[in-house]
Length: 625
Image (cartoon, rainbow, N blue to C red; front, side, top):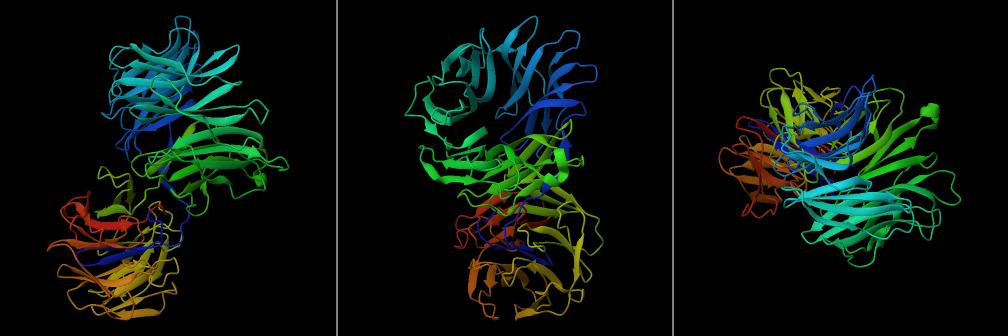
């Protein structure tokens, strides 16, 4: 979402709707919590397809002790997309050592799965290619020939499967890259990343360009001079390009559990837990590093609660540079099992997006373990964790720029990633005849809330769970009275407003009483709008008239801003489509949003196809980013 406070306006054929985001706050989950399996589940790993679908690999154990490696595919909206795929089974009568079914998505919808296996008949690291619906496309391919090679991260490109893992021998762990041809399985490359100082554990492998890789690992010896989280740029032949990068502060005591993510701009963010020499508790630390290896700012503490232990951080970043960190936090009030999950979303410049989010646990015992976070290309991120046995998954929205939504029938459907594909988020409401859909940040948490106007009542779903739990009565509810919602006074909360054809009145006290704010606006036949077109943090009264957006930026009844955009039959919309802090003139036309982000009359408008004819368009800052 926008990096500044701004207004968003939604216009219907006979009604206008406005939203202005206030202070940025934490996210709430998209939809209900997902469970990977009813069986005992271990070692989950997740990955996104380019279109926003996601896939999980995991190990299950049934009551009889039979183990299996499985893969499960999900659609963009979170529902299962195909039957569960069993990769490998190990019956209790003939046990084998199985480890981590790691999925590696391909751009065509197919995927690879990589796992480690030690059985009576074979041992090593294997990979197998599957179709988009889970059917095997070939037999298993053995990645290593002898030895113990444990995979950690993988990627595919141009017919090659590249895997970062580690070898184990009496001298320690050795970071190693193995690359094989996906057509015939032939070995292309096999090299060690770096000579380890002591015990070394690989973290992640990133393909930076067609010519370079970036590998990250860590070693901990107990000696600050030889322990660190490292990164190194390599050629595809394994040659080092420059000295290694050190991410963390080696003088910290008892640091552990590091993780490194790379954003779409080529920058890195490393996280770890550590205790300062004189500190009683562990905290979560982070360091941003540029693609060149230069530090971006200093090391900073992620958690705001410092009176209890924090541990097991995980980090993910999106293509814009925004990143999210999730970790396990201890609540002393809950006793021995007082561990739960906290998270924090950050903008690409390192600023926090609101308060820390709390990952809810429906089990009730507040016991959550092994968190991992994964950012998708469609404006969502996943948090998965073990909650007293099963692996649970939560989805969150986090996309820069305003999300586009449509009201269709009894549902609000939103393209949270602005990809033009399927809706990632859908709300269903019990509507009544004559209800008018709206969106507005009525509780000031920085997220636009889905609302309806019913008679004199404005009803809103502030929890984003499909229940209209917030309400205020304002206006007369007469035919021809058009409802809007926006923050006209800059207090961070959207006000209920009504337009009678010549005057706009708003309930800035949020008490359902008489209007505390009013301004003369427009004439009969205009379409009223609200949007912060000048970026000052207040929604400006506007009208759409004969292809022109006319706005009163001074709030004194005079037109101080105008823009020609659109054509007959369009539904006008104001919203900060590009996230620059100003509401942009937009129209909804034949199932597509067109926005004049340059404010130049639409010489080169931004276009996003979403929705269909007959839908009512909405724009809203659903996640606060």
